[in-house]
Length: 446
Image (cartoon, rainbow, N blue to C red):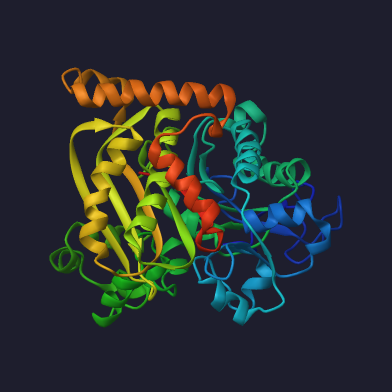
């Protein structure tokens, strides 16, 4: 980790001070100096934008820079992200908004602007790609970088290049990023969580096991609350407990996951940084202002979400074989139902028609606070079209939606609508009090 004896690197100016630990940088007098014996040998990094959405909002509105900020929906929505000030009050992502505001009543609530965030994310990505072509996005606000072989190109070690990246993001995008540097992806991701915001942490290969040992098993990616509780019940509370466990016993108890736990607990991760990541699913969802149980109202919203998800599928030139319906009850219980189509599709009508019976089967007079729909099991749309040469009905729908899409691109979304689209618009005008707090669109990568 940082601040061990060895090579030094100033995080503020990039100088390489040789003074003893604790001494300021001779070039800029900063005390933000990282020292580590493996600093110049490591090349895998994890870069994470700090409280990304909230940081963008603070950047664009200096009046809220020193205030607790929550990005998310209204009273019935959920927290999309919270700034670090709000987090000190216990506010967390995915927390119901009413709980967040109870914990932090003075918070400034900002509705999300995903187009703005996507633009900032692209700017950050562009800076990353000036260092290396091996940039693997994990989500909109974080990525892995492999900087092996870049020292000759940039005449700087990977650590020095990452300091420049951190400074460039702050200067050009106006936000901060935290960086973890190590010998593999798991350790780099773990390191980036150690020092936030605007941090830079290192985990060397030689110290990996000892650094990981005191951490909770939930620090391992893929170990959620349910699985962590299962591990805890089995006496495995820390990563150190996993290190002491017999590898074969872990495999017998947990299968392939047990083998992964055995490797990661010792800091072993063979995954390579890959610049290409396939989209696993495309979906759209919305949270209501008030719980809705009327099936006609639910169907009106479902159709609108089907149009949204289908539009994004077409833009990505993808088609899906599996349709997923997501419902959330007032007590936050999530219901997920799936159906496999006879042919891959990216059409709104096909998506809606497949999900409508699932909705009817699971609604049965029950109220819901959220509804979502999406395609998965994806493939290139051209392949799907070829496979559907004999799907006459699908082909007709495709031509119909293509014509509607063309008109909307030229004259706007309101230029033309199918009957169901008009039903949605009539409903939205009639009952604005019940309409969504927020819209969520998601691409789930592998």
